Length: 363
Ligand SMILES: Nc1nc2c(ncn2[C@@H]2O[C@H](COP(=O)(O)OP(=O)(O)OP(=O)(O)O)[C@@H](O)[C@H]2O)c(=O)[nH]1
Ligand SMILES: [Mg+2]
Image (cartoon, rainbow, N blue to C red; front, side, top):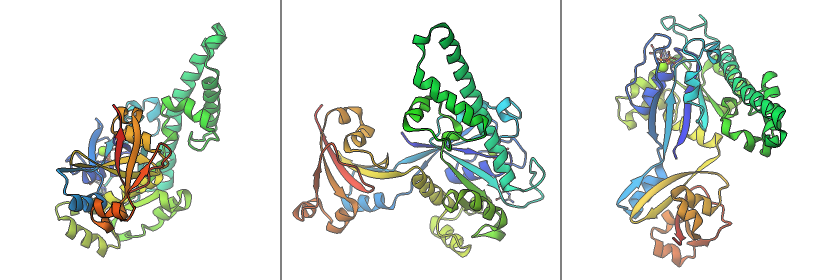
């Protein structure tokens, strides 16, 4: 399953412009709040230099990168969780997301309407955060009160662990604390997992800035960084990246370099998401096909095999593992074996970023 990232923010802040740029799809982007009504769904390929190098070296029949599923929904407004604006129907589209990208308008442009009539990144973030909290509170309160009714009629039918966890979530949300920031232990988190709370998702703030403040972003960005930390704030100019789309990658990178940016917004977004979610990439070469896979850091070999097929996890025997750097340095599997760098690993092996793995399993 591809990593699923939802794009949220106020109306007219540049979400669809960024989505278009990232997916190269042409969804409508225009200066009209609520331009996006249905969610836009796009798959973007994860750019991967190592996959390209392995493809050169191993000359497989095919090479398959990993993907990120991006979903662009309509702008949220104050009261969205209560059905204001286009309502919380949109929030449903991002419940399943692994992470959220919160697009924040930092560009000044009198020609583009801001729903509150002024550019104030921190206040905008607050508005959206409140809506997410309220949406979660609705879900949590409803689930909790249903369970309360069960408890009144038949205590033995009550899932006490879940009931207690939900109770904690409800009181935290009432105090305005996101599920992510509540002091929930692992058991609680496992209990409430099925609700896919919006405020439980890791979030990246994407500051959509004007060209004049590149590369560091100006005051609005400084405020966001002050609040959320450097690693959670990405500075992108949606407009510029959109204008550069017609250029080939080399020219685009040269242009961005002139503005002090070393990578495209897409690449930085993907890297930041991987970091935030502690994701790694491993590779398999099977039946002549090379493929990249996304994996949570710290995953053991059998579960990594299970990403490919559940039978491979069940019947896992062992893994033949080559580290990417070793394979590139030695150049062939024979040489790699010769220097003792093709490792045989068992069930307890923690898969590492860049591992090239052949799984052995019985069916
Ligand atoms: N000046 C400037 N304008 C931008 C920038 N990014 C987007 N816009 C413009 O802002 C308007 C709204 O952009 P969209 O991408 O449609 O905004 P949205 O957030 O998807 O809006 P909704 O779908 O209504 O929630 C369009 O006219 C864009 O051209 C930017 O970086 N700078
Ligand atoms: Mg839009």
